[in-house]
Picture 1 (spheres, rainbow, N blue to C red):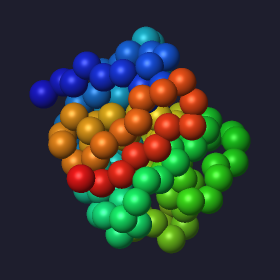
Picture 2 (cartoon, helix red, strand yellow):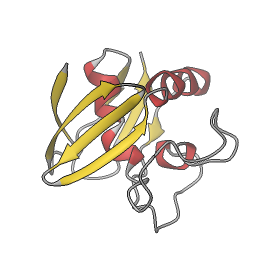
Picture 3 (spheres, one colour):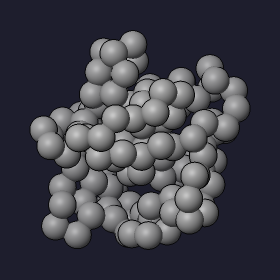
Picture 4 (tube, helix red, strand yellow):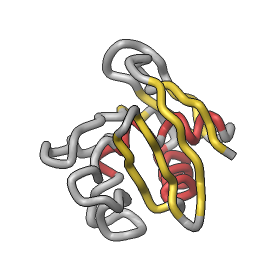
Length: 122
C-alpha cells in the first residue's frame, strides 16, 4: 500500500510505502529510505517517553538536537545503534518523513503547524 502524505508543517506532499524491510519515501524526485523497523521502534520509544516529543527534523549534514525524533533516529543508543536512514547523503529528515507514517497507521498523533511540530504515541 502506498500512502499519500503531507509533511507535518504542510510544506510538501510525498508518498511512502513499506516493501522488503524498507520504508520508501519519495518527495518529488528525491528518494529516501529507512529501515522499516523504524516504525515500530519509534512507536515503542514514544510510548516509553509518554509525552509530546519535538520532531527536530534536520538534513544528514546538520546536527540533530537531543531529545527530538530526529536525534533519536540517528542516536547510537537507539535499537539499531545509529542511523535508520539507508541512503548515504539522504539519511536525515527522519523527523519529517517518518512521523506521518505512524500517524496514518494510527500509532501516533502529530502536530501540524508551520514550525516546531511534536508527536506522541497513541
